[in-house]
Length: 211
Ligand SMILES: [Ca+2]
Ligand SMILES: [Ca+2]
Image 1: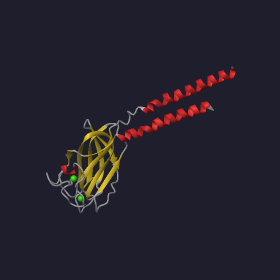
Image 2: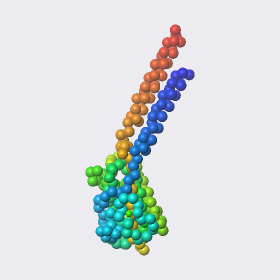
Image 3: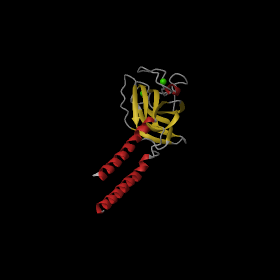
């Protein structure tokens, strides 16, 4: 019975240490609003509805054609993009795009790594509804590389009666590399140690039984 409890104890210890991994990784998760404009296909003007209107925290609090959000130059008929930078590179797993006019227009998201290479991370259906600002959340598997920017592709034909406008963009990620968490590497060693201890105890018990 004793050796069973020892093995059980070691198993619990291994499970306990593994269950702590996501907690520590989660503690390092970071959400940040865009801090720089890297590129854009067009902007309505250099001031009102410019690309830089999508930087920082949200400041467009109603649905409509409001100059504190980015709008591309044409209201309809084009595929446009907006590329924004973030001050702290992260292993990224999502973005919140605050849509404030013509909602439902995001078609694709690429991430910019720190070597300026683009990687596609999201394609899908943006089901954001018009009528009020929407924080559209797109998620993907955590990248294995650091991300410093987002390239957001939009369809200006989504709503033929309005411009398509973005107030703010938030990047979600973690500063801990997903492949560099060390504890899982200890699993085979810990399990091996547990087996070795059990074997040793078994031998000792056999010896004492013989004596
Ligand atoms: Ca439109
Ligand atoms: Ca804004």
